[in-house]
Length: 367
Ligand code: 13P
Ligand code: SF4
Image 1 (tube, rainbow, N blue to C red):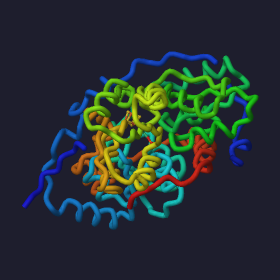
Image 2 (cartoon, rainbow, N blue to C red; image 1 turned 90 degrees about the vertical axis):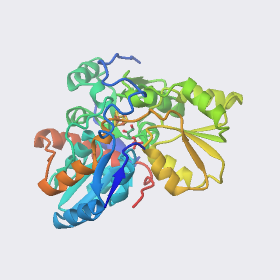
Image 3 (spheres, rainbow, N blue to C red; image 1 turned 135 degrees about the horizontal axis):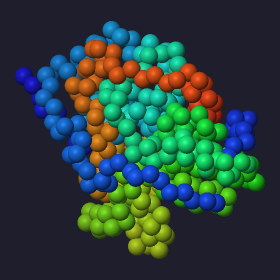
Image 4 (cartoon, rainbow, N blue to C red; image 1 turned 45 degrees about the vertical axis):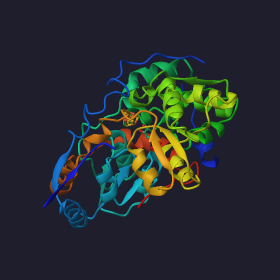
């Protein structure tokens, strides 16, 4: 018998800061077509696997002494078979503290690189090394060096959605779960270069009130594609009582403003882990969620009494969906794709990543 699987669905900071290099810079062309690309790389649609698939994954993981860490945007079957499911900050912390011989990162490449940077002595595998990130691609290390050269006194804060080389040129990393705390802990007189996400940067500027925060004009094609119109239309259609919005979304600023004027219901800007924690506190009704649709699986599990609706059901990250059931099986069986980071680059990047994981409260994680 087989079943059909669908694939849709600061104390430490100051010490870590060294002088480094507002203006706003432009970005490279971004990959992908925005939140309308569902199906483009959506794990190749359905995968046919035997009922023993999950048992075989667990057997191979035990044989390899591997821990499987999955991001909240992974397909439901991948989330369900993983040891831990969480946001990018939680996955980095788990990678740093894991005692497993092998870490399988069911997510995108920068997450696996981050795990390798934090755990250089362990084998780190990713089911498909082509699982990139349009946001990480929106700044190169050469562009960062040029930007720094124009701001020699600035502190460089890099979102974790960046390459290892960009992290190595940065003073501290952050995720959407702790970006505000990271920036708030930087001495007020120091200018900050915040990269690469312009919408997260706008959120941090709003939350900290910091005028000397210079933001790179990068974006995630999935989140930037969730428009204010999508949000408003959906909120009206389903008579939502609340909005959960990821800070990478292009609609976040207008949603907060409209919630303030009473044109939209309460809107909260949350990382994926923040959404999971907040989901447990919602008493009922309908919540519209503006982020990649994989998040809905965890939200529905966390609080089935609530109706969870995507702001845009085409907001699917094709890179996240490259972790198919077949790819995960191949990864564990054959030990591929192994992620390596140049040791000199990793050593420089580690300072920034370790400073990141020291900041903020633990994110909600599902086992
Ligand atoms: P989180 O840090 O909220 O998990 O988001 C990661 C990401 O890639 C968002 O697109
Ligand atoms: Fe990158 Fe966007 Fe995909 Fe997240 S959703 S991994 S930011 S492309």
